Image (cartoon, rainbow, N blue to C red; front, side, top):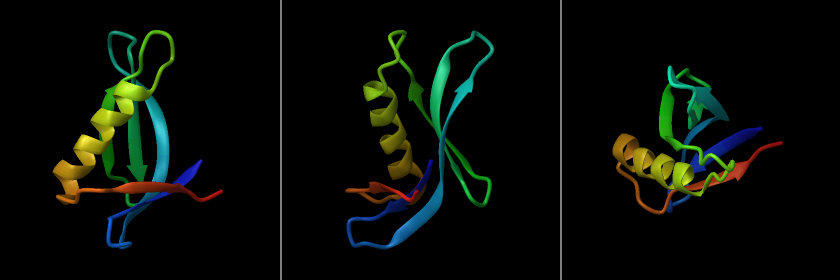
Length: 77
C-alpha cells in the first residue's frame, strides 16, 4: 500500500510504501521505503504480529530524518 508522509503544516515530506524486512535472526522490522529508494527502519514487529512498538519507532525515525514533529501518514490507494 502506498503512503504520503506529511508534516503538521501539510507539506508532503515523502511518498512510498510500508514493508516488513527480515533481519539475520528472522525478526521482522517495519520499514518505510520512499519512491526515491530511501529506507527508514522502524522497530521490530511483536511476536504476535503487533505493530504498535514498531510504528512508534518508525515515527521516531521520521523525526530523526526530517526533524518534523506531528508527522502523519495517509494511505494513497
